[in-house]
Amino acid sequence: MLIDHRAAIPAATLALSCAIGLLLAAPAQAQTAQQQRAQQANQIPTCAQSLGTISVAEPPGRNWWSGQQLASPTAVIKVYVSKSRCFTLVDRGQGMAAMQAERGLASSGDLRGGSNLGKGQIRAADYVLVPDLVAQNANSGGNSIGGLLGGMIGNSTAAAVVGGLNLKRKTADVVLTVTDMRSSEQVAMTEGHASKTDLGWGAGAGLFSGGFGGGGATGYANTEIGQVIALAYLQAYTDLVAQLGGLPGNASAANAQQAVTMQKPGRLLKQADGRGGAVRELDVGMMLYPTGNRSELMWEVDDELGNRGWVNSTLFGLSR
View: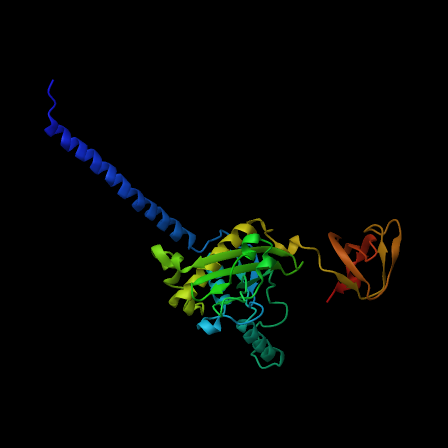
């Protein structure tokens, strides 16, 4: 039987062409997947409900941002908090100072009647968030600057970071910490890293297209090093939101009750109705710790010696 080689050659050529096409398509598909991952990683996370109220504090130590014509990193963090709707943001900066000045006018009687501006209206912050750089490198020839030492993170990877901000290589390693304002417990600490290469694939294009200007963080959108720092903080903030998903819905109720101080002499009773007599006498100035149990005007409390009993709430006030 004779084989027609003229028919076989096109078939072989076609197979080879298909193989080459698959090899060329694989990097293109990988590139597309990488691009998609980069874009997804640089989106501000959103929450269905607020995790509580939060204030954003200035980083401790030296001012590293003004030398790069950047605003404080708190401006970036406030943009993330506002757009994510994961926290209710309370102002403890310039807005707070302006508010206090307005309240000064109210207390001096200079405001119109019915202004509804007075005591007991300021919303408490459940948490405070502090942004900073991870590390400071003394051997960088002035190219790396930072605030916190990497060893404070408690992570070998973080401790090995060369510098918090490398201006030459355009890299940034940052950290975010969240502290409970009532208990002083540090409820979360997250790190973020970004480099100039992360600005490729169009990653972060949507992030920098708007919003930073209105938040006073224009430099972070308009400069390369600013974009790198912003992406590093976004990574840390995204991890932060994931960590804090288990926070109590009511941070105030979940914390220990505020202490009270006796303002009039009284007695610590064994039962709310007075039956069983008294545990001890209570003098003016003694501090008590409510357990949360109440029966009309009677509150269950512990004293500083560990005694538990009931006391009339008209005899004490909140400790200051």
